[in-house]
Every structure is written in C-alpha cells, then in structure tokens.
Length: 233
Image (cartoon, rainbow, N blue to C red; front, side, top):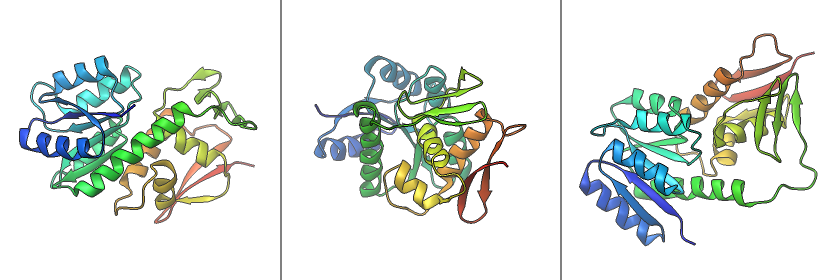
C-alpha cells in the first residue's frame, strides 16, 4: 500500500509543486491550507508523514506540531521554514519536529528526507523484535528496544521516535563518541546535508526529559564532534 504525505502549507503554488513531485514518487497526498485544518486531517487520517509550514493562518506550525506531540502522535514531521528565520528551525525542533528544510528547497533533498523518515517509521513499526534484543538500563533509566519504551524509576517517559532511536544508539555504545554526521546517517537514514542542528535539538529535548542530576550516567557533548554516553564510575 502506498504511503500518504500530508502537506500543510498556505501557499497554493508550493502545495501544487510538492503534490506533483510526491505523487510522481508514488505517494498519496493530503493537503490543508491552514493550521487548524492540518491538525484535524493529521488526527483523522493518520498520514505516514507531515510536511508542515511554520507561517500558517488560524494556527501556526509550531502549535500544530506541539499539539500533535502532546497528544501522543508519533507521525514524522518535517517543518518548512524560511531561510532567513534561523530561530524557526530551532523552535520547530523543540516543538517536536523530526526535521526541517528551508525555503527555497531542493526537491531532491526534500524527497530524500521524506523517503528516509517514512522508511524509518515503517521499519520501526513493522519489523518484529529481534531475538537477543536487550534492555538498556543505567540507574533508574531503562530503554527497551523490544517494547520501544523508555522509563525512569518505572514511570514511562514520553519520547518521540527519533529521541528513542538516539537513546538506543547512545546507550548501546557507552564511552564511544558518536559524531553528529553519524547520528544523522544512522537515525535519520540520510547523508549529511550540511546542518547538524537537528541532532542538537533532539539531544536537548532528551536532556530535558531525562535530567542528568544525581544519576550514574552523563550524556556529554564532545564540542565540534558529537556526543558521548558515559556511565559514571
């Protein structure tokens, strides 16, 4: 069955260009021209991915993204931002977006990111748990690759798919430096396009959800390189 992409964008010309290229790649397309309509479609239709503009009538993209995430929605969201508005990228990622792409964008790059995010979600939801998958536990934090859950002190921690994938990769290799480029390739499934801020924003959200005070582990920044998960002696 073909995958479905929801476009939430108020510029009709951009919608038509995106729709044409996505359909040519075999995707079904839903479209909404304002934030409220986009939110309603996302909740009712459960698309495989959402392309979400920031500046929208009735409800902006940040609020749409935040509302979906607070409601437990795990659909991959790629935000469309204006190149001159650098803060939009950070705000979008902090609201729960999986990725962003700036306008004007390369259609080849956008399609690659759409494919990578949809493929990643399909693998995570369709593949059965692999024999030998082990619970990753340090202190009172447990990351379970089988049930795909994170708990702290036995209580569930609400994380997005990308946050979960990052935790599995980091917790699985204590002491190893994971570069931002490596994390983009392994977690987002696409090659380095020139901006690793996506990784940084997701790590920031992980740190907010799993505070590092009085715990026997540290998620360290290796400046200019990436991140390292360390178990304290």
